[in-house]
Image 1 (cartoon, helix red, strand yellow):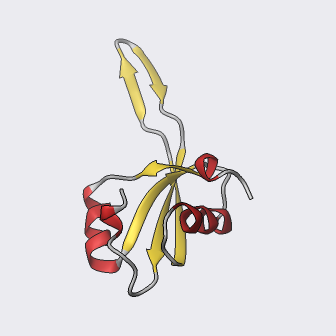
Image 2 (cartoon, one colour; image 1 turned 180 degrees about the vertical axis):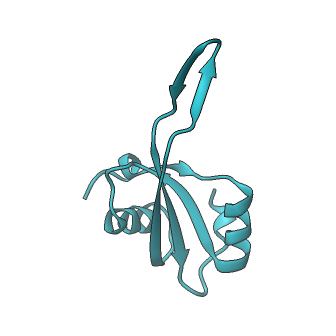
Length: 95
């Protein structure tokens, strides 16, 4: 297994992620693009005292940005939606 900190880059703090956390007990993370679902599950269970039920991933394309007359792109990144098992602790307290 890879190092936990090389798999998990940080929490994805958006309004959609906050609604999913309250309603469906799902947590969104920014993860490294070369990590898979098994590595993400193991990293979350190792870093936090929770039991992961399911992992969904999404590849996010970098936005086009402009500085003056020059255009470029932000880097592509990967997002993981981690579903926690029933009866787990409130994950917001851990972040």
